[in-house]
Image 1 (tube, rainbow, N blue to C red):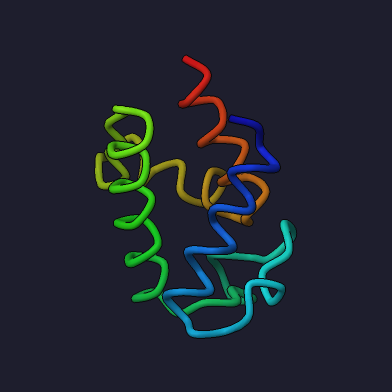
Image 2 (cartoon, rainbow, N blue to C red):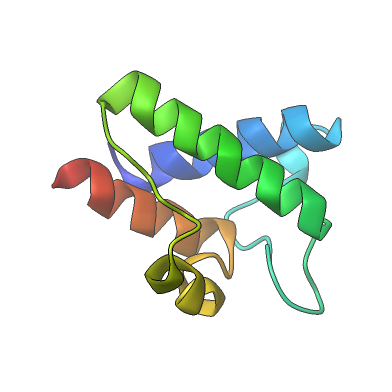
Length: 93
């Protein structure tokens, strides 16, 4: 699956979680940090939803809570685009 497809998935999931229109979440949307477009609880809900989707649709385990994953949080989860790139690379393996 491409990064663009993953970005669309993330936007759809965020729309469900936040009850905002899907168009509110373009690829450059910040997910962490002072300018994050979502609250920390919504980020956790997104990570759980992604974990479920990857396991259900691709048979891939996504351990977002590991020390390694969380230490890279500022880069992997910085924006929808960076998160989508990371997810696309996981699916491609």
